[in-house]
Amino acid sequence: MSSARNMIALKSILHKEVHRFMRIWVQTLVPPAITISLYFVIFGELIGSRIGQMGGFDYMSFIVPGLIMMSVITNSYSNVASSFFSAKWQRNVEEMLVAPVPNWVIVAGYVGGGMCRGILVGCIVTLISLLFTEIQIHNIWVIIATVALTSATFALGGLINAIFAGSFDDISIIPTFILTPLTYLGGVFYSITLLPDFWQGVSQINPIVYMVNAFRYGFLGISDVSLIAAFSVLGGFIITLFVIAMTLITKGIGLRS
Image 1 (cartoon, rainbow, N blue to C red):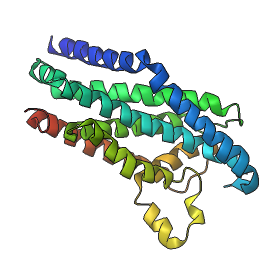
Image 2 (image 1 turned 90 degrees about the vertical axis):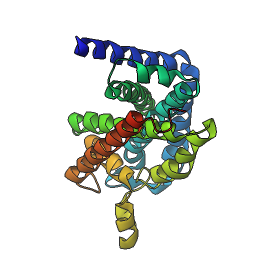
Image 3 (image 1 turned 180 degrees about the vertical axis):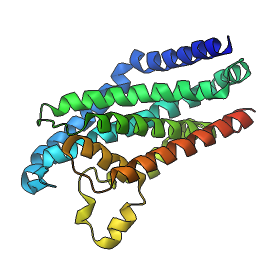
């Protein structure tokens, strides 16, 4: 009986989250598509024609996986951060906390919503990329696993950000000062093998390097890092962030006034 109740609660939260961003699709789905289209035009067509090849592939084909992953990361994160903070600000979270459902259902519901938006935007960006280049698929299972684990990782990160945030301005601090720099330095537009040895070592501290390269391997069959290392990093981050999120919600840190 309790498992059936938990599934109903999980489906309700997930449905609410998906309905929320689909209801305002002009704000949640269209802007990322326009932004990535500009990246394709500027970096792929204009700059890429001068760069030539990267990693044995034309520059446009090389950056497509990175741009898809960048859109997945930003949208998975921002969806949960904004949605959960809005629920906290409107005191809706308190109703969920006193409801007879375990806290993992709340976490899974919001994370699932963030994953849905991130993956949906990733699919839209993939379709747009077909207007600029042909997409190769080296290993579809690596692609699916990487995008699912990455979207889950950053959805959890957005949830933790929302828990600690004290105002709407606070949910933009992490994306602006941490997430965006790490993404641009994560090998989206270049191979880290082009960097000097010291900076290659520094780049390996950046978790987004592993996500982008694993995703690129799924398309092109090339990667600057091993797949084992990439999936180990993803698995480690998901477990760590899930434990942190569960601990914060269980203790009511940042949620109970």
